[in-house]
Image (cartoon, rainbow, N blue to C red; front, side, top):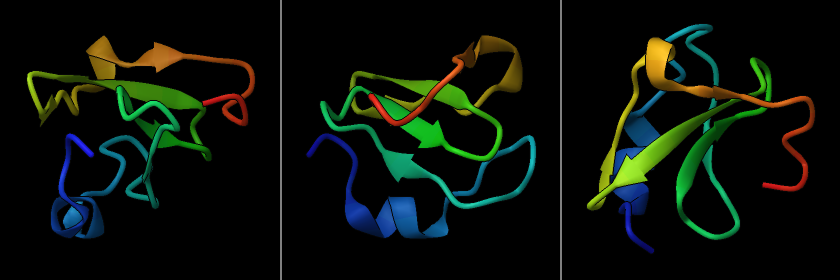
Length: 61
């Protein structure tokens, strides 16, 4: 895992302040509520709303 579970436990979606999770391939932080993907670059989650990728369905991630 590129991002440690301890970090995931304290992070929240910057848009809705809701729960987030790691994507199946560990390349994104996923907010199921907002349907946003926050990219992880060099083991650093980029938690900027303007840089998040909007998707129709987060189940595949």
